[in-house]
Image (cartoon, rainbow, N blue to C red; front, side):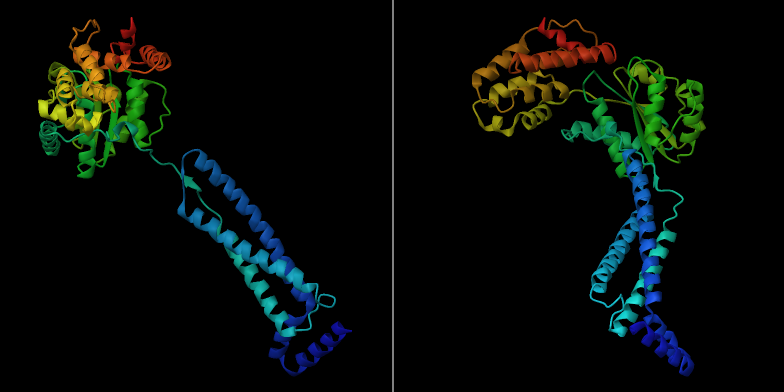
Length: 432
């Protein structure tokens, strides 16, 4: 009966006033049901597309890629409009239970609800159309962990003066290759990393890349480490093919610093794929080596900087930082100073010994350590400073318990098998 009445009223108004007819037509239940069903269908379609897009996002994130900002915004927008539409349709399902045969007595409310259903439908369609992306994500270049600044680094005056000289040399357009040299474990690598940090902060270069060369000179490894920093993927298998690809990629960098750590023999930069000098004025190379001959004679480095042992006060300052400032104001002070002196100004020895003795306030313990450091070294290993050897041996001897000592030895022997020859990894044989 109610439907018949509405139909008669509609026909009368249709004849008398067309504009009024357009308004009253919203009241027809058939039109409302149709719009509500279309809304539900569009919502389900958008939900499916949202799930598909989220799967692609999850896959990209597992690969370590960054998600495009417009994709993030679309997911947030789709979530909001789906939530709004779901609430509307759920509320309508509840409201219809109180209506007679789906037709509410409040015709004004019915017209408003129809308009809202149409609005939500249009909003859903608009969001769906905006969800067609050319790409979901993009690859990023991970932070170079090899260039992370050492948290234990101290800007000693002797090191700062060398650092400033190196920075000045890098600013010189006529210098394309320079080097840092000094005895093993004196801090060459640490200084080279500080140069990288300073160069980046001062915006001297657009890119800084780092690779450890070592005595073995693994060309593919060097190429790979540099390529990783540049986001370069090799399709070539041969070293020559990879060198060409790397060469072309480096040429695209207007200003780039390549740090090659631990040079022993001549390294053919062309074989690696590093353009420098007249081949690429914007590419500069910083080398580190133990011998100046490795730099000036074998690599033709233009300027070289010697890094020596720390002075007594600098060594003591580093020792206190590592061992704890409590040694300054205790009965341990003088024996602690003697322990620091036995480290011969080698940062690696100072840090190793100080950490081994840290937080132990037993005078006997410290005197025993001093006695061990003063004993003649029996090491026969090549390229290992006696002070460094004795420092690491002391660190081993002070480990509490056989389990820790065995772990120390296991790590050492693993390093012997996997690491470069003649390295400090050979030191675990100190137990014999």
